[in-house]
Figure 1: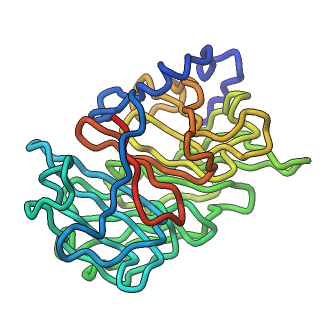
Figure 2: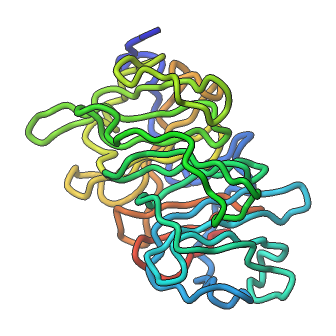
Figure 3: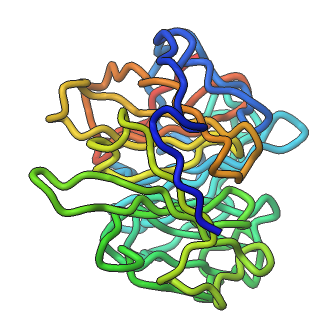
Length: 297
């Protein structure tokens, strides 16, 4: 099914204030923060952690106890992919926090999502192939087995892709050639079952919508989903909006026809290549190629 929604259609909504845009919450946003940046967080203080200086990606999988898994990718020797079990978000050096697994496992992508049970990791966000991996031992990155992969861009006319956090669908921005190149449509492919994309027709999306005008010349750095109902894209630095992250929100999770533009998040890091992830009562920001996270309450 393909439905094109113009700027005055279902995708359009007024820009929220920066304060409102910071409240990226909804059902999937655990503890989305609205306050100031609080502190820098070094992961190397967690017992068993490799030394980290070049972080590339971040993912958080909260659990019902207030803890959860924190996963980062890096380009550091001995790191590459690290899974932490966090019991105390306030003090990462607390001995209750630990390293579940780490290894020199590098699928070539800097961003990822992880199944809630640790059974699958999916990687995306660069010119390398996007991929889904099955973990024969949950959360042990050294037991990852490639289940599915396809070149990224999915076709010659696309600009990066990302997976839903539950593995139910795959999204990509379609890129048109111009001066400069611009983003035109958001395309979606549904998985046969969660994390199974082996049967999709990469030439024919299941759903497509025209992106709002605020996004068309942005999003050049890729897209990611920090929450089940939230889609974010990186700004390019030359489009007049400054640095930041553009945010779209699903009215009905996964239905592209219900997306509305929420506004641009402020970017105190002054970087166009940052990511963030929601942890209980806080948002964790990662600036690419730095060795630490920044926490926002």
